[in-house]
Length: 298
Image 1 (cartoon, one colour):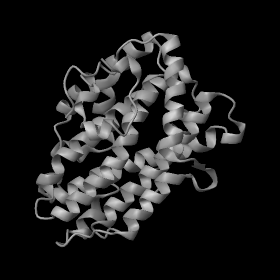
Image 2 (cartoon, rainbow, N blue to C red):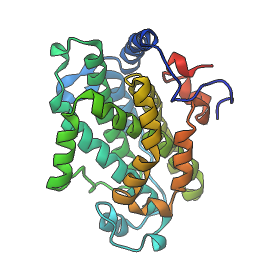
Image 3 (tube, rainbow, N blue to C red):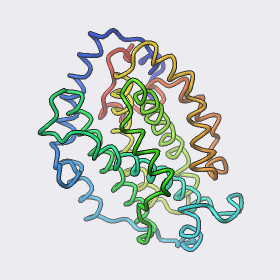
């Protein structure tokens, strides 16, 4: 983890002038970091090349997992989670989280203007942000391939959930910016807790564990930047509301969307990490490749 005292809380105040400068700073960072948008492919130049590296240099687990248990439970858990192998439980948690991100970003992609029609800097930022999320889905899928789970797919949800995502992305920013921030915060802490478990859960698969961590870090570096970027949309009052509602968002998600998560994670500890979040929670090697708002730097 990074040195304590080096960063301020993600809920730190910021002036409108400072936020404007941070949008400009983030835009410069993300253009360099992504290498440019491949809009028709919903992809980014450098992200595409990085994924190709993983595909050209595959790592596959040496010990088979219970594939039938994964496929039986990865959409909706049917077995008793307390009796399922922890590898399968870790992978189903990854899939379910990624599937919700994929569903949300698919709805958002069609709701936002294409880059050529994006006049505001925030619109351009959002377009690259969404493309990064599609890249994350591909990296999550590559995690599953480490265990030869090639039958998994990003399936659509039922009508109610699909309509929820559709209407959510069409809400005005004043309403949706706070839960969008909360989701980025939850994603960042979720990835941290996934990382902590890798060496234990995959102790008999050191090469596979290393590849999982490499893939997870590719995503986490982006997520750290996304968290700061989403925070930059919030007014002082929205920051207070977002912090007050953080526990509810975590508990709702893990109760409704990934109920088996409590058999793998300490959800209450994850919530506390979210409430206490500053960038010192994360490793310096990740932060050094990411972006942090100036008002979160000590």
